[in-house]
Amino acid sequence: MAAASSSLLILHPRLTLFATTLRPLSLFTHHFSSTTPHHPNATGRSISLSSPPSDFAQKIDVNPPKGTRDFPPEDMRLRNWLFHNFREVSELFGFEEVDYPVLETESLYIRKAGEEIRDQLYCFEDKGNRRVALRPELTPSLARLVIQKGKSVPLPIKWFAIGQCWRYERMTRGRRREHYQWNMDIIGVPDVTGEAELISSIVTFFKRIGITAKDVGFKISSRKVLQEVLSLYSVPEASFAKACIIIDKMGKIPMEEIKKELKLVDLSNEAIEDLLQVLSMKSLTELEEKLGDAGEAVRELKQLFSLAEKFGYSEWIQFDASVVRGLAYYTGIVFEGFDREGKLRAICGGGRYDRLLSTFGGDDIPACGFGFGDAVIIELLKERQLIPEVPLEVENIVCSLDPDLQGAAATVATLLREKGQCVDLVLENKPLKWVFKRAARINARRLILVGKSEWERGMVSVKILSTGEQNQINLDDLQ
Ligand code: HAM
Image (tube, rainbow, N blue to C red; front, top):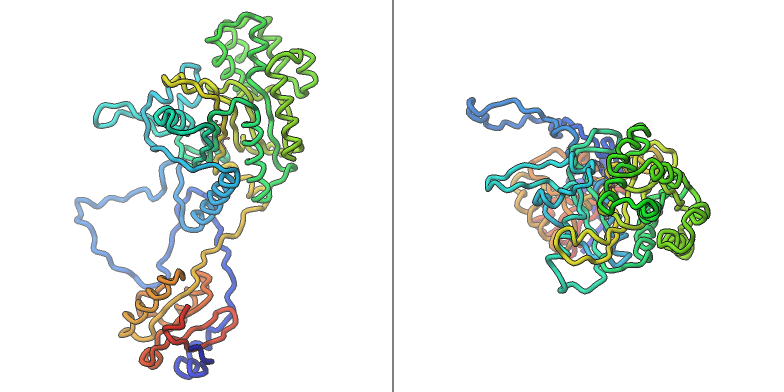
């Protein structure tokens, strides 16, 4: 039974001193930073822990290894917010969540096309002399699992995953040695309806977090463009993936270097010049004039742009023949999300990889997907001042007013938790000033005090912290 509790003021006069309205705290200072903050003991008390024996004592570096991050609570809340949006969007599109081990067999990543990702591999021999690697991406694991599942999974498969990936990268803004990647993949759909759906999901995600088509765009092309150009010059099939990897370095290394490398994979000067001319194209009409409309490259790209209109995201996408992507396995449409201000590296990227499964000994199934990292998007949100406030929120704080009532406070906390209420139970005998400070820090809505005289009557004092309203409530009526 709830009753207005003026007695609370009489019983616990200290309360009124601190009956202030609580405001959410701005806790985001780190935004996925890699520094380890120093947290003084909130109570100001010194906690004495027994020291380890001196022969074990060593001063450790409190920073995580270079390029990796800790996630203290405020950064973890932001990460959870981001992942929550990844998950919700994936589920909006009907995808199922999967995951794979962070440690995989090294051979999963050994491709012969000279990809950068190969040189960046964290790989080693385990204690059983097996070559293993920390996954640098999720796609090979996905392919492995699809082969393992075989015909037991009906097609199309629509899976998403959010997993940590490891690459020994040169560190730049938003590029780290570990990052989390959100992947969505469709297995078993040969049409560009697959790619169109995937881009739609990324656009949906951007819109949800406040990013617009003015901030971000997608550059889209197809590896079939290169294939069709190279087929005019009888370039061997084996050179195709290698040529794509070399072309992906355009803008990162001098053009003379690119030409030299292309010659090494059996491209003639004439083929190289023609290729470079096509790669500079930014209009589908121009591409169509060059390749004609009979080939798959132009047909699929046109279909994708037409579908984009129907989905309603035309303003987000543009044709750009220079996009080829740096991974060997892509076979068709490729795309990359980019920052229109040009300050950041690719925000996300993906494409079609219809022949990856056979490289692992499985039967090929048409597939497409994308990877979206957590680090670049946080940088972009910072740039646009769109980092959300995600404050810590624990609905209730429960505190005993007498050391003898610690057990009673535990009973109250259990009761509330069983009803699904979040409770921060004060575990030591603390002054009320401390309790109020803590309540403000955790953005508690209610303070529940267990005092001797109320407890004897089966009641507790409940204070709504935003209004200061205080009531004595029967334990059975506590919700
Ligand atoms: P990726 O382009 O290598 O593609 O990576 C995808 C995204 O992961 C990048 O656009 C970026 O957001 C993020 N990323 C990659 N490396 C780093 C890094 N060192 N630090 C921070 N973020 C990074 C793939 O990995 C493909 N497996 C994607 C895919 C899935 N294709 C088909 N399905």
